[in-house]
Image (tube, rainbow, N blue to C red; front, side, top):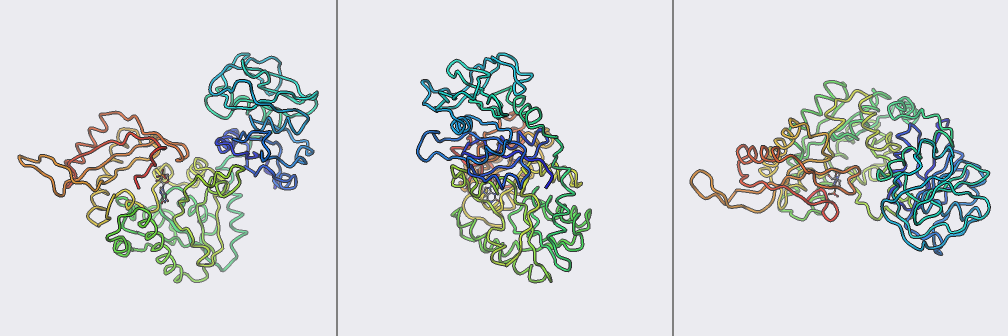
Length: 516
Ligand code: XMP
């Protein structure tokens, strides 16, 4: 393994993934590890520097997560952030104390000494703080490089080794010079080459797949048409074109023209072996009469497994199942000190499949973040509309039709969705919105149509536009009212059964992005 890696030890900070991405934005590969990762694992991964994240614990609490002290004997350049700084200092002779005044939010950093870590950082810079404890006494080996009003040791450095600590959060955008400080750490202190890029690792990923997939066997790839499964399929097609079969299941709760689109791209353009399963009738009959959202999800999940199982039985020598698992899914399953896994809904379209069917898994994207997968997709030649597609939930329109899912309601919402997407695309907003969709409410609404009162069979469509980087939190989009007006007018004129349109102005939390 020759790729240089920066190891991020996860002490439970809500920003740990952000740190990993900030490092990668500097063309340096990063990986997130549990706090007690062993020196052997770090060596195996060719780690050239350590970042210790912040975390919710108090560094002097009994059960505060601690690193394996032996990692400090590796003599790696080290950068501790907030709690991570306290951990570093404590392990190297310092003492922690509760801060006399807690500091939250923006404050001013005064740089007192020059150092490669602070190269190109002005003497006064805004930084973003969030801490209770501070390092009260560093022992003789550390020296202070910068302070804030309430924190005399906001940046510290070991006198003889490349070990640094910062009390603020350089990874957040509220610390405008944070990017510069991280860049300095990576390039000046760790001497990182800066050669990593997601588009450039395609060859490596292709070789890994070729090593894993034995000759004479087949790989099945469930293709939904979303970014992750599309990039997975395109990558596998490059690696093992003759050994790949893609399966697209039309479950009746997809967006308009989905099936034609997927066929045109993957069968038409890439010439892949694509099997399209027309299962709309099966799914819709399983959904008849069901109004509970979890029950809808459960039934769709089970039906999917049944359909997939039947299809797989027709593919000889299918030993492998490819999935578009991303790095955040991998991290979520238990790397964190604070157990962030508990906070996350698991959204796997094919959950349970590999176990039940006895497949070996292939997950070529499990080292990548979504934006990196998009870059890879572009390099692999996928069309822009696939690469930049908004996410679409596995249970599809079924969780956007509140109440019972029927074919008529699906058709209505599909038409509405198409209009919504057309309008934001024409207006140049599609890429500015993380997710845009309509929700069909189960309440009739009184209106006037022509000269008469309309009530029965007239429904409300709610429009939901959110901005979000990781879909864990989101805000509603302050969109131009002219666009809303056009959408409203088209929905009520062009979609029979819609006589009222409302805009959802709630953030997540407290709401979720989907309504069900
Ligand atoms: P929520 O509604 O939990 O959604 O705020 C967060 C993101 O996850 C998507 N989502 C799902 N995706 N199966 C999926 O594959 C599901 O059951 C599911 N539920 C929500 C949602 O569209 C958003 O991007």
